[in-house]
Amino acid sequence: MQPSLVRRQLGNLIPPKIATPKLVSAGSGEGLAPLVNFYSRLPKGPAPSPAGGIKAKYFNGKNASAAPAVWVILGLFTVGYTIDYQMHLKHHKNHTH
Image 1 (spheres, rainbow, N blue to C red):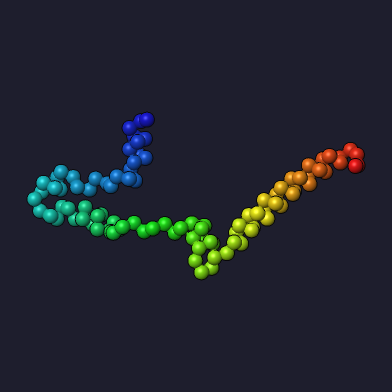
Image 2 (cartoon, rainbow, N blue to C red):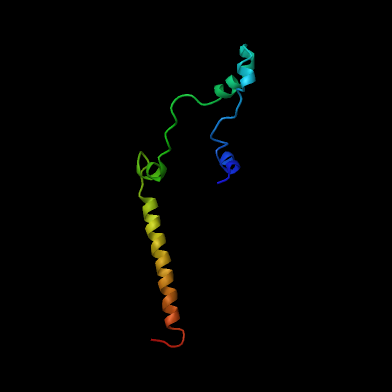
C-alpha cells in the first residue's frame, strides 16, 4: 500500500496534529488552547450500549410479539409457492395433464 493511501484511511482515526513543537515550547499555556478545545469537545465516560437490534425491538419487553417471525414465514412460503407455480406452468406449456 502507498503511504498516502494509509495516511488517508487512518486520517479519521488519528486526531489532527494541533500541538506542534512550536506551541508546546512557547512556555505559556495560551498556545495549547486549540488542543484543549479539541479534547474538551470529545465525549466523556463509557460508550453507550448498542440498541439491541431486532430481538430487543420485537421479541423482548412489554410489546413482545411473534409477528415478524410469522411475516418471514409467510413471505418465504409466498416466494416458494410462486416459483413452484411458475415451474408448473412451464410444464404445461405445450400439453395438458
